[in-house]
Image (cartoon, rainbow, N blue to C red; front, side):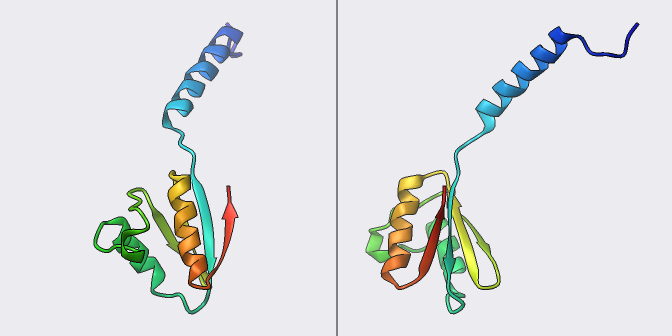
Length: 103
C-alpha cells in the first residue's frame, strides 16, 4: 500500500475546501486615517458602531460590522459595506484628516 494520496481524494478535498471558503469568505474594505492629533476618533467610531452616538446628525448610516484598529500615528477602519465606508471616508476628509484606500 502506498502512502501517496489518490488523485480522486485530492480533487474531492479541493472541492470541499473551495465550497467552505466560498461560504465563509466576505469582501472586506478598509482605509487608514493619518493624524497624530486624532486620538479620540477610534473610541468615537466604536461608540458609533455600537449605536451610542450618531455622526453628522445622522447623515452617516450606522455600520454594524465596523472594525477599528489603532496604530502609532494612524488608525485603520474596515467593514464589508463599501458604500458606508465611502461615506465615512468623506466625513473624515471634510474634517481635514488624510485618508488612504485599500480595496
